[in-house]
Image (tube, rainbow over all chains, first blue to last red; front, side):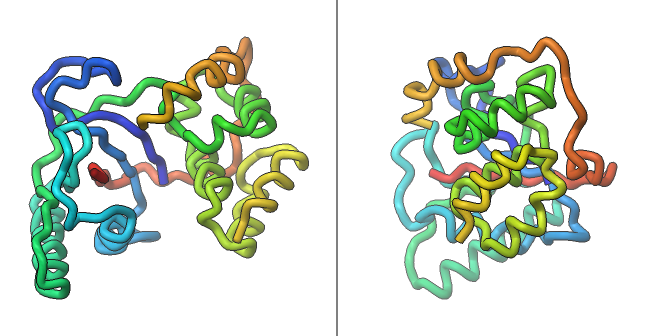
Length: 176
Length: 43
């Protein structure tokens, strides 16, 4: 799985954080459907924010950007089920994903960036910020150090992350 | 990302472009070629 922070949904060319135009802050997930389904990603989406809260701005709105007709139908069904289950209004939009623009390097892998030991290791692995942002290892480490992984999950993935013993210990210390 | 501007200086300190790149992590080599894309705005 790869993840990136960025901007989508608008018409402004080459948006930047300080000049977003009509774009929305967006998370892009590249996933293997054999390992995780789109429905499971939707479940994570619904439970990661409050879709019953009206959007404050175009920059910060609840939206599912779909890549194909199959995703659009799944997103619409999922939103309808949530609406029926809760009996309330859902403010989430479902729109086709147009062009996605990567956010600036300093927005990528937020939690990893706050740890100088992890960044020391990743700086030695990747020559560019784009390589780092697209790294499955950095995405996994970001989730672990954010406290989202169990100790069992962290120990399972640690040997695959290519990190030093010191960095690994810092990740394990944050596992649940 | 509102707080991220605070992190900008830290990013500049801790993320200078590496002069060389070392070995890539094993996990990076396990990515299949045909990944699907999903995208979300989280309010």
